[in-house]
Image (cartoon, rainbow, N blue to C red; front, side, top):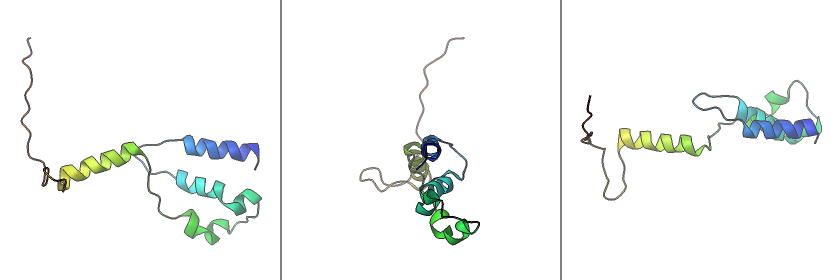
Length: 99
């Protein structure tokens, strides 16, 4: 594997974009594919390998997983013992502010 492709793989794995979908998982799969690494590809490569290259991708970001969990609990509630059900309105107590 060339230095350039090693650098590209590292750059793709280090790159983070939050809040929008990107083609980074696709590019990582292309770069790791054995035929691509060996240079044994042609213009039909993506079409022939679409099941692998275009498979659904689950984001492994802890931040996004945490946000997804919190939004799920806020909308649908939880089944954690002692906390079942949807969250209710929480009273907010603010300290007085002098003006």
